[in-house]
Length: 439
Image 1 (cartoon, helix red, strand yellow):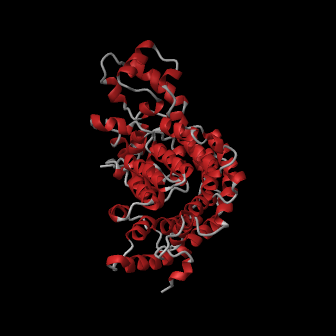
Image 2 (cartoon, rainbow, N blue to C red; image 1 turned 90 degrees about the vertical axis):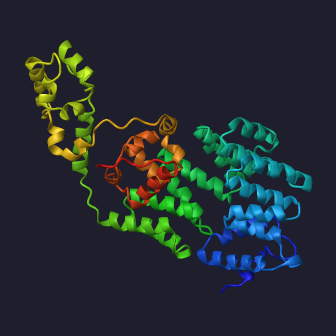
Image 3 (cartoon, rainbow, N blue to C red; image 1 turned 120 degrees about the vertical axis):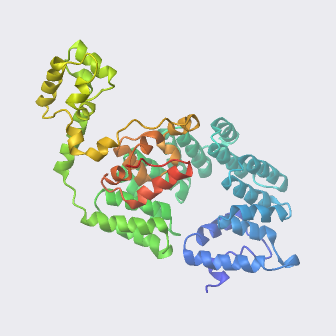
């Protein structure tokens, strides 16, 4: 087993390390599974001690570093009041959704000589996470004298602007942060991520590479870089990124699934001409009936039958149309002639995909309390870059749009694999929803 000295920073020493040192220790501990095991052993040794030898403050901070936040809250509440206690207690409370309590704790830390600027930025981040953008803006304005001085100020300003949808301004602030502090990894990551989402893949790759060239391992950057490489069919480079993650985190679940996806992609045949034909066919099916010159009677009948597009007509048979009141042979011939010019005919979709057509029954009524949730944008699911791109390709904007897709439809998107599918399914399950199934 590795020894404490390998960390160089001893959280359990008589004198507590500085906040900056604790942050560096946290990055190092979480950079590999082996480091996590060593640190957990140190923590257990501390927790097993009694009386004056036991350090509740250090143990509470260690639990925060390990992400065991509920345990951290219990331990830190027992510790003696001090600056570090309230700062790390606030971190644990924020992670468990207790944002108001977190800000109360941050305010208390000021009574123990905490840095007002640091505390103000922490409160800004908490307000942003709570969606209280007005309070976050007000908090940042208190520190406007740090403009073009502090990288962290510009990073927090960029995060707030990004949350508000002000993407161009956010990018500029991330760049300013990096001009002031080129080693600011979080600013570099979100700059890369913003370029990635906006389609500037070349810039995103360059920024992600800058992050991954340093240590400790930045897992999220490596995974996102692997996605970009795979999307551009650079499978070997994608594999190298995943291998680098697995070197330090051999049991990382997402990386393990991603590696399988990449291996599958290497042997997957992509028929570009077939996909183009499929796209043209889909565009034709989405053509509104109103684009065709139909008689008033035919138009009115189709409207009453809720037949809006060519695709709807292909799911309708001759008998369905003739069974409708006032719909006669003349209107039927008119519609068949229009479809014939496109190489289509009534009921064609039912003949090609009977199972899919059967699944097109009217959906069950939505419970009123879920309606607001379904209308929310898919961005609120906090998905990875890969999953978001796949949803963009499918033109899915709301959670409702997503829930109307099946697993097979998602897996049909190029480079969409089991990793992204499982991620989306989990995100939906967490809010009590699921993808559509074919009974």
